[in-house]
Amino acid sequence: MDHLSEVLKILDGALRANASMAADYAGLLADKLEEGGNRQQARQIRERLARAPGALASVQDADRGISLNNLPVDGESRLHTVDVSRPEPRDVVLVLPNAIESRVHEFLASVRHHDALVAANAALPNRLLMHGLPGTGKTQLARWVAAQLGLQLLTVRCDTLVSSLLGQTSRNLRRVFEYAEQRPSVLFLDEFDALASARGNERDVGELQRVVIALLQNIDALPDSTILLAATNHDQLLDAAIWRRFSFRLPMPLPDDDVREVLWGRFLGDYAPINLDFKVLVARSEGLTGAVIEQICLDAKRSAVLAGKAQVDEDEVFRRLGLMLALIERVPLSTRDAEMAWLRRWDRKIFSLRVLAKLYGVSTRHVTNITQEGASDGHEEDDKQSG
Image (cartoon, rainbow, N blue to C red; front, side, top):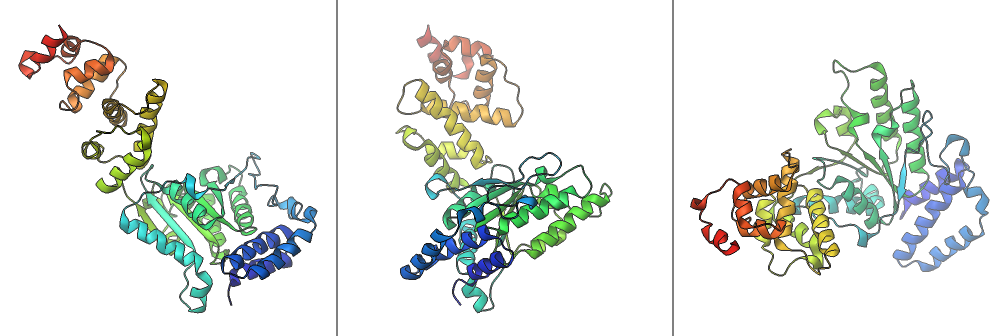
């Protein structure tokens, strides 16, 4: 049977007297029928939805904190435990190594054809676990998946679910999972290790063990068709039982040369200078995450806009890159002279005395003095021209 997942969700909503859940999945069913060419059936469903009393959809399960107009909250702080967004494909830039990209498309295909896979007894639960260093694109990938599927993204920062009250964390978990089941959506558990850390270590306590057990139970209770994404920067901390709950596991590596070149081009966009040497930029940015490259490009473009320029200055891009690397390596640069000295040490070819003098509005002799370089460094001509 086509679209069995949506039919079952509509039935669940009806059996729970949850009109918002039934209506949301009926709307999704109408969308899928229309995409498949069944416009008349889609129209019939939408006509019935239009006649449904709107008041019912806003009051279901209010006492449990999971209604359409009432996001789940932490019972102790009363803060929301879920952020709701609706990413659009045009707003999400995703660049991945080709092998990782293929795995992502395999996951999307599994989601889109879940009913057909169920009929063939070849279905896997729609669950994806992403792990890698901060800034490698895990959150961006979650946004991209939601955008490609045209669904809401329910983002849960798992550390916000943890409560000091005994048992409250498990209740928070239950509310989040119940809320996600109400409507077509992608549930994204960020900072996943805050909840899913391995049990049995010497610093573990009973409450944390109960949280992991509650998490496993909630995941097991989800229908296989529910889309669950999780992300962690510390995959080595995850409980072994957690790994088995995710059919798709995706390492998020640092961008390779090809990916970095695409990222520099996309993030600089029309502000990239015509003669920018992308090959050098790619080589000197080895080891950086996509998030760091994006930040450098934003800083460079902001400088260009404030200076009234249509393009960023090539030397300014490399300056921003060098200073970002100093920040990452925790090199203290509290003065402009310290910045010039660092950039000169970092790459003498890119940052000649003349280039540094131009960037900082000083003489080449001043640059020579602060970098403690004499005439023997081969830049006598810079000094002569500045004099």
